[in-house]
Length: 165
Image (cartoon, rainbow, N blue to C red; front, top):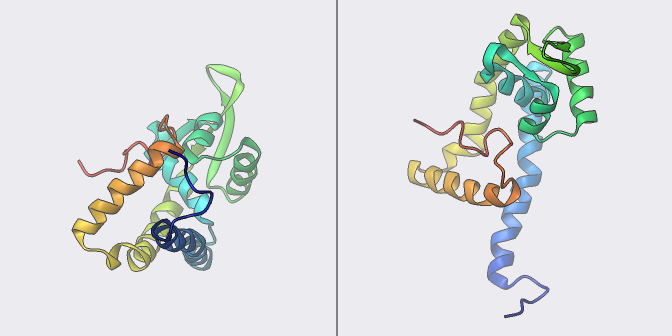
């Protein structure tokens, strides 16, 4: 069975609002975090991943995988966070070629302080628009799509590591 090179009307009606949401949501989330905490969403996400790591420390390569960042992008972001005292880099103790990133006490405080505003923005923009049943459906849909985008489940959040227990 061959498929048309164009969307069907049903596919277009599904895809158009999803694409629009993907454009508007990052602007809303970044805007709040920048305004209130002088952090981008990616800064916050990297710090949040480090808060969940053992000793708040990860190898740079592992943090890049978990945040879906290129090594140059992550290095730039970590450099900015390091200048602000939120993270420190050090040679990996088990491999001199590797670099570890550790969230500092000040970085952890910053991430914790930024969380209420971030949560409120996500609730206002997404979660409060949905019933609990719809939130469950959205979670299932997101996991289905993520299983195609990240089949190995390496990006934080794609693996279900934030699912309620």
